[in-house]
Image (cartoon, rainbow over all chains, first blue to last red; front, side):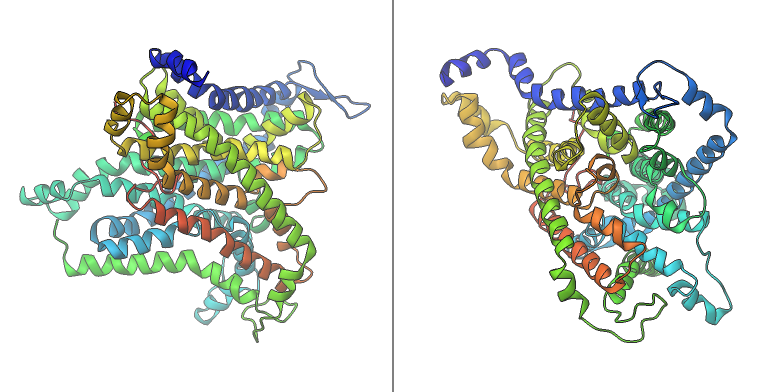
Length: 284
Length: 278
């Protein structure tokens, strides 16, 4: 039986590919993309006014609410603005350490630094938010450290959200930039130097263009993760973000929550299409 | 490229500041976990280790940890099977739409967690009329863990020459035998690394979990989420948090050791590029 099955696949590479892909594609297309389709459909449903139950029928009420209510526009622009600010901040913060790791550190130091950046990547997202909530509080560590200089920390607010999100997603930017810089052969940098370029020019004309796709790759994470976060704004902010509105609506009014979720989806689809043009997918 | 001593030293300072920025908040939580007082003002006036035994004995935290282990193990197992299959197709075969597969496995983590969370919640509750349980969490976690295994496995397959597999086929081995005796042994450490990272990602996940878990169930992040921000026994909660951090760092550390040769990425942490060479 096994033998005959094997013979069947032997001369038919397409059959092999189909057999290999059936399960993963089935899961992701039917399970995941199917769920996204359900969510899109749900965004056209509405709540029965009397029972408060979800009624499955076509209605544009939710989108009407989102487009006509000023609040949603403000929240969308605030969220996209902070996501963009976090992305730029992380790119600036990540570059020096990534450059040192890739081009100056000795191999031993390099692997120590990679581990140091990777370890907190997937651990303790909540604990990080909790730590900053403590640090930013009125009698927290930040005001304690600033008070000798007569300064005062930002307290809870949108500045704190920007700061904390930049902190939390920073490793997601360091790793792709580091990997991107590692791919640039040292000889290329030497060549630029030999041809008389000053370090600033080498940076501008050689390093930046070659690392840009990697920066865009990192930005997919910093941007997307900021766009969907509701825990950070709820704990160190004082204003609503897209995530908060979705989260607060999903129990009471699932169709409206689904309709609001369309905003980050549209934003991310546009972002991913632009990112692909920059060749970022080779670096994620 | 030559660097002036000034450039070197400036970069060293930048590295030190960045690392301090990354680790200081974690150290602050460590100090709060040793704070005997109920107050949260900085700095703690004295230190104690009394919260750690209390944290370890907390039954709700233990149940939550056990749930997290179950969810992580089940989601990782599914992701290992699906991710390996997809990586074999993409790295060993040429076919129409191959790049789309790489994109498809990436979407669940490239889209914000609330999108995945709401989508799966709507499907489970509205289409299948399912009760949210740990099972629904496992399905959700498996979906975004596939890319981690895929990236690690595909990176390894691309580095492995196909000559051994060809030789095996020439000597009359069936594709299944070749996979079992040649391909799989060479992929093993990449799969272990991918599995560990997938487990770590699941172990720490809160956003999608919040939308797909039943009201009565708790994973460790849900337990921390419910207690951390308005704690009535702060020291104990922070001690649980410190233990959670340490536990989740172990798989990431081992995975990094196992895939030292491959370059790192943020969506695979130990793997190379997911896009196959043309």
